[in-house]
Length: 224
Image (tube, rainbow, N blue to C red):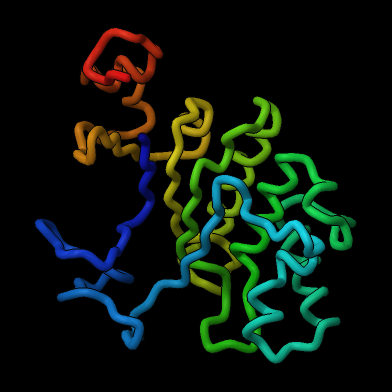
């Protein structure tokens, strides 16, 4: 399993070693729900995880419908804006079954980055986590999603109001995603980090597990 890291992931677990920094400040102890130093985190699930019985506008705007006091017309406007950012337009009233695999992925991303402009935490998520964002997609659809991930990140200037995603984390086994959408790689094998390095070092690493994975060989430390 590959974990492409652009930020420090904070989990509710005992820290074994190292330090955790949030917005440049070292964190002591774990983070509770009452802590003000929380990151805005969006999640894009592997299967898109859209509600089949809801339209695209209802899926993308789900959080706003459930937790904001915005009128339906305003939520629809925000959904349209979010869909436009991921290259989708005119699909608001379709159902997930009427979308292609790549369109579902982009709709899921639109849902992950939509925000309530009336909330205290204005701006898009500071961190977006992608779980196999290109799994099941053909090479062209994968390129569209990978370029979109990069584009949304490049729009960031380090401030929430800039409209860009400051950091993202990708769990993937796709070689194209590793090369096109990541900067730093962490390779996990049997729950242990066995290698880490830049995306450019992926093809030159002499780590046996990395070489077996990169070449797709049956013989090696990874067994089935």
